Amino acid sequence: DSGVTQTPKHLITATGQRVTLRCSPRSGDLSVYWYQQSLDQGLQFLIQYYNGEERAKGNILERFSAQQFPDLHSELNLSSLELGDSALYFCASSVESGLGILNEQFFGPGTRLTVL
Amino acid sequence: AQSVAQPEDQVNVAEGNPLTVKCTYSVSGNPYLFWYVQYPNRGLQFLLKYITGDNLVKGSYGFEAEFNKSQTSFHLKKPSALVSDSALYFCAVRDIWGNTPLVFGKGTRLSVIA
Image 1 (cartoon, each protein chain N blue to C red):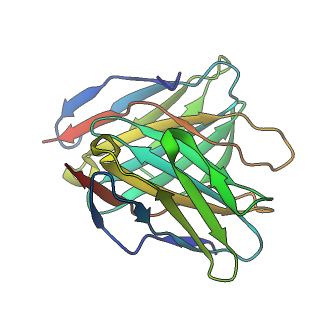
Image 2: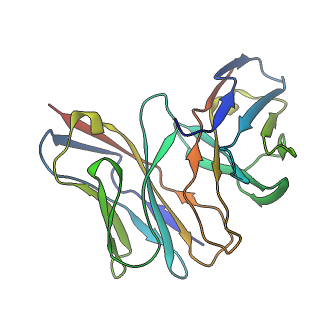
């Protein structure tokens, strides 16, 4: 168990809908990362938050947004869903030293999103 | 720009034999390098990392990786494979001085046959 929790585990919804995925990082970790894993695209970095602020952005669609709350949990919002958004969405957390040192990320179990 | 390549989609090895999962990288400066493993229906688990120092890095579950700067490689190895090592393996890289996120390879599926 990595200490990172994600809810829900599975989500089935229809095209055009909006969903929210939730992540709680390991205790003490200030950084949260979101990734999308699909068969054809592999593991794609979406966005990173550090202590409530957006730190880095990857291949995140405009229909997607995220935030990190004062208690450090994070939510990923996916709207106007399309069939191609069906994927596994992972959250990861890490300790940041503030000196640019990159520490290993600890991944949650993921949320499997199916868009019908 | 930084990138990582895992040239093999699939590696098959007999139980008890040594295994190697290949990874090559490209960064503008010195690299941070990581290996992660993903078991079915699970998130990625950290195996090992290279930042600086000894080129041979030892990690979890008996895995090790060798950093080769001249060949820009960071191959994952294990002297004797177990059936339970069957999983998806990801290599990841970032420039040591950059402020960019970790870049993951597409993954290599390892199948250890009894």
